[in-house]
Each structure stands twice: as C-alpha cells, then as structure tokens.
Length: 391
Image 1 (tube, one colour):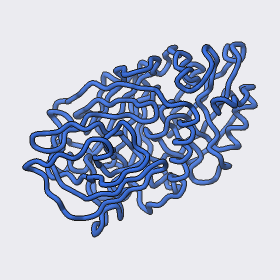
Image 2 (spheres, rainbow, N blue to C red):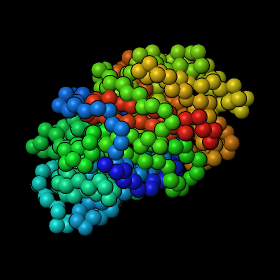
Image 3 (cartoon, rainbow, N blue to C red):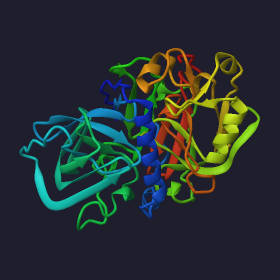
C-alpha cells in the first residue's frame, strides 16, 4: 500500500506558565488511570508482524500538541484537529461547526470526554473521514460537540490512543473503534499501527515539522532500526502507550526500571520528583520564577552531559542540545533572550506511582516513535535529528 501524506507545521505561542499548567493538568488525568484496559487487550485478538510500511499524513505542532487537517463528510469539510496519543475519541465542533452531508448518520447517542485541561459533550455521528487521499474511512464514529471547554483555535481532536480509552464515552456503547481500528478493519492498512516523525522546532509561526504514518514505518524518516518494547504491565501507565525505562544523566541514575508513557499531548519531558531533584543537582540548574523552568548558564551548558534513556536494552542518547528549549523561541515562553532553559520538569510526585515519566514533545522531536496496537508494543528509532544542534 502506498504512502499518503499532507504537509504539517509548528506553532509555538503559549507562555510557559500555560504550557506547564496544561501539561500538569494532563498528568493528573493520566495518573487517575480512569480506564482499566490498555492496548494489550486488543493485541490478544490480532496476530501480525511488526509494521514495515504504511500510509502517512502530516501533522501540525501547536506548541503543546500537533494538529492535522481532517476531512469529514461527502463532500468533505476540512477541520483542524489536535493529534492525541493519550485519548482515542475523534470529535469536531470546538471552533468550526459540523457540516451535515449525504454520509452523515446521527446515532442519537450522547458522547462525553474529559481531558486534563478541557472537555466536550455532544452527539455521536458516523461519517466518512478523510485523513489523506489514500486514507479514507467509512462509517467512522465521531463526536459532534454541543459544549466544549479548553479548546481554542482548533476544531476538535483526532484520538489515536488505545481503543479502550473510549470505554463509556458513548452512551450505550462499551467502546467505539478509533480511526486506526477502522483503517485496519476496512483493509486500508495492513497493521494497526501509527508512526510519528517530528523534528526540532526553532521558528515561531507555522513551520513544516513532521509526519504521521498509519500502518507502518516511513523508512526514510529514520536512521536506524525500530526497536520495539511491550506495553508496560504497570498501572496506570499500562492504560496508555506505556513503557518501562531507565534514565541517566551522565553517570547519575535518575530512574531504574520505572514505568511511564510516550505522549504526543505533553509538551515537555516530565520525571518524578526524586529523579528531577537528582537532575537539578547534577546540572547545577536553578528554577526560573518567570517561566517555571530550570535555567543554566552558558558555562553550565558547555559542560552539560547527555541524558540516556535505556528502553528494552537499547540506549537512546538525549544530547545537551536536546535538553534545552530553543533559544530563538524564548520569547514565546515568557523567557529572556539568549537565556538557556531546560525542558525537563518535575512531575510533582515521588517515583513509584506507576507513571514516573512522560516522554513528550521535547523527546519526540529527536526520535521516531511507533504505536503498534496489533502487537501491544511501542517502537523507537533514531532519526537525522537525534543529534542535531539546532537550539
């Protein structure tokens, strides 16, 4: 099956206080572990080889999340949707109203989803959803919002998390198929997986920035093999795209065998309080009161060591350059020009909670990630941007 893609862009405009507020609200929601099932539930029903190729669409980095243009209906109306691996319902109506067409079917069932920093309530429809010319889904469940909270300048969400995150969101339904489920069930993709490619962002405004691939891996986007690890068995991380990892800063161990998640909906890199304190001590960083982020001097940056993520026995190096917020974008976070801010943030609780880290936007800019429902696993690979000195 040939790949299908659409350009995507990045926009960084929120102040750091807003980014931290939204991220931490999301963390509290994830820690609640409201859904008792994870992607392992679906894997037991599906047997396939790891993905090797697929269809792709591009996405837009909105500073906190990424968005893509999605067509709904026949003829299609385009909507700007946030891409979220931490939720699984697809819905529209936050900004642009739903346009009824010949393929719109009202199921008359109420749908409601709560997020860390927002929520929506509405009615479930089924309709034709077009992600790209090669990725058209028939009879996709979508929410049409009548009430929304916490969403500005977007029309809704494209949920690409595990299907069980839709549990009890639609009245009368145990769960509803995600866009990835339906692409697989309708034979459009060979494997129920999603590959995500980002790259470091150094410019404000809309800048081309990455790709979302359904059904496999876009090989030209990676510089090495994709290494897969099973979804962690530790709750609540197991309810999402959760993995186990060790984390070091230089020779200092920050986490060892802890569970956490890989998440497109979180902007920064979050680690448990005890790990964060070790990191701050080792780097000599100070907390900046204006932004809420750690800051270091140029001399400290010159001596900044790499962080090392050990996942499934494979070590991923997070260079000194990867650990800092892009200096060209300091003004967008309320920072001072040329000051150096670190992207590692305190989660707000000690390790052992079952969700001790979140590898968010800052991490995903440097590594290709694959979310494989068929085999209940997460894959990671290096890219040409893993070692980029762009900040």
